Length: 445
Ligand code: NDP
Image (cartoon, rainbow, N blue to C red; front, side, top):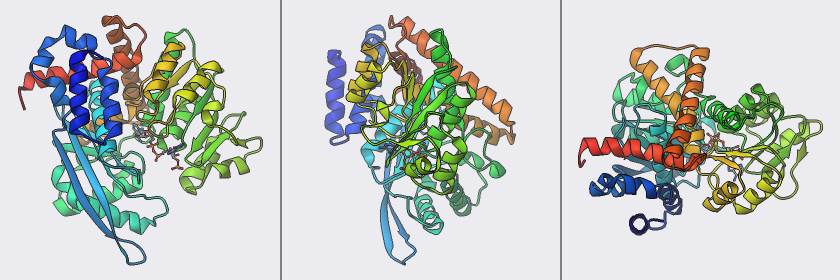
């Protein structure tokens, strides 16, 4: 790493001790910036890089609620408002026991550059709680969401900060959060949250957008290499919102998804994942991936290793951070995988990224490949602001165009910096320079 960037990175580590995922996300962006700082001394002069690593505001709060047994439970809530140079803070809420400040900051940092890549007027933020909705009744989830919003409402607004869903926060949770916001503020301010239901201010395609957008992005990567989805074997980790919609769109585009997973294991289904059954098991019954294997003729529950041992042309990690490590990358490359694109945020470790790139595997980073979700959230905000509702087809067409534009922005930026074909550097540089230029224009704020 460039000496100045190394000093800045050491400072980030010292100021944010113990936040390993945040350090990893910062390092990954810094690794792409050596040429940028040489070509743009004005960024260093205005301390843009140091400022970009410091969130504008970090909020941590107590979330007390009462469970069905009458016991008082206490969780911790977070909202990190990272950067508003391009628009109101925008980014999802994650409810998962692993959530702590370092996870929220890594996600908020990533989100800032991802949102810039969409070309839409949105800044970056992220939030969540260490609350685990798994195993909770609807009533418990509602009481938790109401308590969470009773603090959060004072920090958000359609011109200030617009949260959405992420892991553990789907349509049910967004409904409870919006209901409480409306009640406390006495305002039907649709643009304050995205991911809303279609009957009350939501947008067509928002639920599908991250997974569909990922498939569109990969289609562009394949086309750039003179290939297509036709006849490709695809492996998708996870079986949540992103994974399910990625599987659906890959099948529509001509690929076959032969394996998927959840946190309890993975399943291999050579005929192609049966999406209706997967949805029944995971979305309706909130069951385990083993239930899918049991009910589907010919499907096998993975007994050894991990999902990355299943040979494929295209691998789409769509579950969680750091799920694809160096060993997995080596095995994927050896087995002939040609493309790895991230549906999840930071699912590939830095060592794995290096190994994939050295082996000639095309690597599509999450901040570009999974930006379809937030882009469609911004489209939801546009519809809310103009009291309009677009059709499914119109919204999907806009999503596809945005993903095509992000893909070509990554490649043209990589070319400008003599890094042809490097999507990771292209995405980091394009996202960073857009935010940095806006920050320069806005002065020292
Ligand atoms: P969900 O909660 O809907 O799904 C997460 C899925 O990943 C579940 O199937 C879960 O299994 C599985 N999972 C979790 N940990 C592991 C693990 N260690 N190994 C294998 N599977 C695991 O979340 P989303 O689909 O919304 O989000 C997934 C990722 O995509 C996250 O990184 C998120 O930040 C990112 N993302 C999401 C966006 C969105 O619009 N939702 C937008 C952009 C990025 P189980 O059912 O057992 O918990």
